[in-house]
Image 1: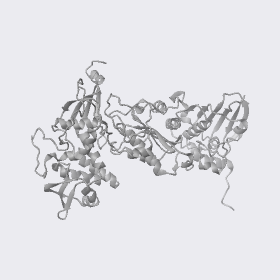
Image 2: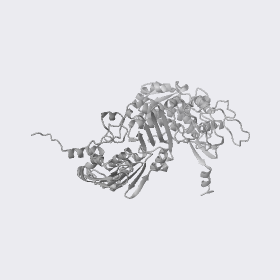
Image 3: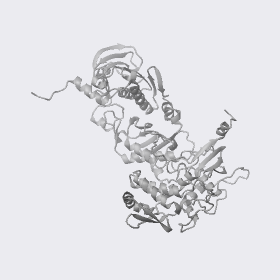
Image 4: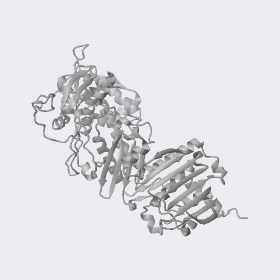
Length: 633
């Protein structure tokens, strides 16, 4: 007797339905995508009891003729694909002809539809995939789908549904993802009789994001846009200061379709490297547009995963778009407006204290132009002197003296810093930031007044009617880090008068040997000195020799913890430590000229976050201060 059975079409449909209809949220996704393909301008979604008992999706799309409605629920019946050649360039949300068949196979369905221009419509009821009734009816143009009792005939699937609350939450998220990808369509979601969200459908992405994600999320988003030939990306990314604890607020769309993509996720997060705190993730809403032939959407039953024919090009496009958006962010919060940047032909991006005005909300730029630009402040002529100006203006008389930015100023308690191990004077430090300082000196800054230093840590600056507080250590640390990271030469080293002996464990010795060449390039000279001992002969020229031992120990600890999985990450970790040890220290009095240099780097927009992702400045407005003093309520 044969052991192989051929399943009936009904059982086969029920099994196949499991690939498309995993839960009620899957039904909402498929029906909304059908509405989008039908050219709907408005879609209303209703659900009850988590969607398990009732789902209704109504649209004002083109509707269906009676003859089309009669076959729409058959397997592989579709109006969006005619032959195999259509698989090479799919431009619709659905195309397999599986969704309606799968949904009807495991639920009770009621369809009411009327084609545009027809005098009457069609009403159908189905149960477990079988048509129970079909008749002519009066109804508005468009389509209304009602789905009841999902999995009523498949108890094995029904028992795996979660609570109504959990399923309803999944339905809301599925509808939100669909709505977020179509700003030109107005979407309303009603859950158990209460409206959950409504998108205006005005075609503006910023309106859609604000309506669906809320004000708190939208206010921290930066516009982002970049094009590269027939490929472009636009949307929004979050400020590094608004990092989140997970990736739940990352939304990626390819030609209007919501997708999950490790490639795009990696591109975004690489752009945030060294600006976002460890364990925090950016939020984003990015719309990728490319030719239909350049992407394969037929690799997953739910069509949420895609393949790109030019993955590196897509990665570079998204990476540079996000990087450009972050470089334009207004960290200082200066109220003085700057003129809008010229189109893409400009030789370098302007890193001003406030991003240039964006009348179209997005700033667009071609990828090849951005790649040719360097991460520096745009050279612009210094402002003319204004005798009537009551506040100081930056660089009216550029300083001629090189300043000691990196050396630790003398602490008040000791009155003198020890230089026992130093083979060179304490003014070695300004070599590190000389290049960065020159670029800042050539930039145009807003009028500002340096008030002074508070608590031997915070620089106080009055600018544009606001009070700017700058963390001098964090800002200076970023200046040093950026210079070291961008340098393509070996770092200068300073030889210690007395070597520092280090006793290392076997694991630390292995890490030292593994990263020895990298440490040498950055200015560390470490030699074996006995069986388990090593001697530190030289450190980077920008580092205070008194910090040498602590710096090496910290570097080895970071490498040991596994936070640097690749050579570039290992280099960044080492640079973090070098920059931190070389930066101006908190608790030390700092010369006014040094304070001014750090403040101007922040005001120029070149310095926004420390290498660990902390903001280097905060703004207090007159209103904030008035509220603190109860001048206003």
